[in-house]
Amino acid sequence: MNNAIKTEWLSRITDEKIKKEINSMSDAKIAKFFSKPGKFGTAGIRGEMEWGPGGMNIFTIQRAALAYADFLILESKNNPSKGIVIGHDNRHKNIEFSETVAAVFQQKGFKVFLPKNNELKPTPFISYCVNHYKAAGAVIITASHNPPKYNGFKVYDHGGAQLLPQKTNKISELMNVENNYFNTNLVMDKSQVEYIGEDVENLYIDEIIKSLEFHPELEKKATITFSSMHGTSFSFLQRLFEKMNYKFEYVKEQAVYDPDFSATKNPNPEIRSSFELAAEYSDKSESDLVIITDPDADRIGVAFRHEGKLIYYSFNILAGILLDYYYGNLKEENRLPEDPYVTSTFVSGTFFDTIAKENNLKIKKTLSGFKWVGHLLNEEDKAKNGKLGFVMGYEEAFGCVLVPTTRDKDSIQASCLFADMVNYYLNQGKTLKNILDDLGEKYGTFADEQRVKFFEGPTLMEDMNEYVNKLRENPPTKIGSMNIVKTVDFKEPVFELGKDNLLMFWFDNYSFVAVRPSGTEPKIKVYASIKGKTYADAQAKVQEALNYFIK
Image 1 (spheres, helix red, strand yellow):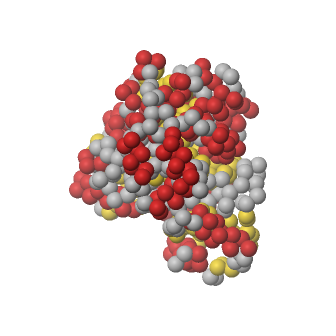
Image 2 (spheres, helix red, strand yellow):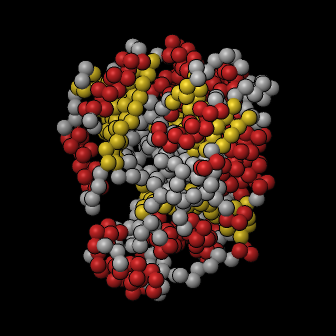
Image 3 (cartoon, one colour):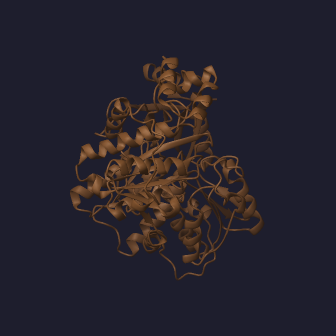
C-alpha cells in the first residue's frame, strides 16, 4: 500500500528534485509518511516536514487548502466575497506554504487578507483579523510549540474560532476525494491581496490595553523581561509594554526569527527549560516579571520575583490568581457583563473553578482544545446578538483569552493583564506569592501537575489508545490513600460537546486525576489537581496520583 501511494505521487510530480528526495527516503519513512493523510487533531493538522500524504509539504498544504476552500463555498455561496485571512509563524517553508494557500483561495474566487510583506504574526492577531475584516475564516500555517521538524495547518471560522470536529471531519472527507493537489505552478497574485498593515496591529494592541490595563495611574514599579522564543510575539509585546510605559528588556538571542529555535532548549512554555535564557537575563537585571510566549504566541509562560528569586507556578494556579484580580477589577469598575461566566477545560485544575464559584460566576466546561471556547463564544454571539456574558476562558496548557474579539488563546492579552496585576501588587508591597497565600486562606490550598508518557513507532496511535482502553476496561477504585468516588468516561458525547478519549477519576474534596492521549503529539498526558490540608499535603497526593499511572 505504501509503495503504491509512493508510485502514484512520483507519477503526479513533475519536479525532478522532489522525485529524487522521495526516492532517497528510507523504508521506515516511506512506511510512516506514505500511508494515511494527516488528520485534524486538537489544534489542526500537524506533522513532520516530510514528503508523502502523512507529512507536511507543499502538496499536503495544497490539498488541505483546496478542501477548506471547497468547504467554505459549500457552507455559504457568499463566503468567497467575504475573503480569507492567512497567517504563519516562523516555521520552515512558511512563506512558501502561506503563499500557496493564498493562491489556492484566489483560484477559488476568495479575496485574500495577508500581513504586509507576508510577515509572520501571532495566531491570536490573525483570529482578531477575521472579526476585524468580517472574513469567512482563516488559515494559519503553524505547529505552535512543537519541535522544529514539525509544521501544521490550522483553520478558523467566521468568528475567528478554530473549527470543531464536526466541520473538520467534513474537510477531511473533501481532502480524501481531492486529487488535484500536485500543482507546482500556483502563484499568488500579489496585486489582488489586501495587506494587513500596522494600523490594524495598533488597533488590536490599543483595544487590549483599553480593556485590560486597570491601573495606568500607578507608578511603574514592575520591570519586565520577555522572550518571543524566536517566534511571532516580539514586535507586539515590545509595542504593548512601550504603550503601557513599562521598563522592559527582551532576550536578544531569541528575538531572531529562527525556524530551528537555535537559542532555546524547548519552544514550549509548559517546559521549565524554555525559561532558561530569559531567567538568566532576569537574574542579571533583577526584573520582577518574566514572560515567554511560544512561537505562534497563543501560549504564555510566566515567572515572577519573590524575595530575590524567580518563582514558577503552573498555569492552573496562575489562571486562578489572574481571575481573582480580573474579576475584582471588573466588578469595581462596574464592567461585569450580564450573566457573567468563565470557561475552562475538563482537565484544567479546580483552583480556578473554586474562585469562580465563590464569586457566583457560572462555569462552562469544555473538552480539550481552545476551539471549544471559541465555539461557545460564537454560539452566544448568535443567541444574544453580540452581548456576551464571557469573562475569561483558560486551559491548563498555558493559555487564556480575556477579550473575546480574539477567539483563541492570546498571550498578548495575558501579558497586558499580568503586567498590570504584578505592578498593582508591587505598589502594595506584595508579590504574587503573597497573593497566592492570601487566596489559599480564602479558597483552600491546591496543587497540580501534569506528567507525560511518550510513544514511538508505526503503531504509536494504536498503542496510546490501548493504554487508555485498558484503564477504561479495568478502572481503579482507589489510588494510594485516596478513594475514587466517580469515574467519568468521555468516550461518549458529554453535555452536547462531542466526545474525547479522556478518562477522569474524581476523589472527594473536589480533586481529580485525568488521562488522555495528546491531540497534537505522540504522548499520553496524565493530569492531577488535588486540594489538600496544606500545600505539602496536596503536592504529596499529586505525586501519589501521577505515580499510579506513570512512574
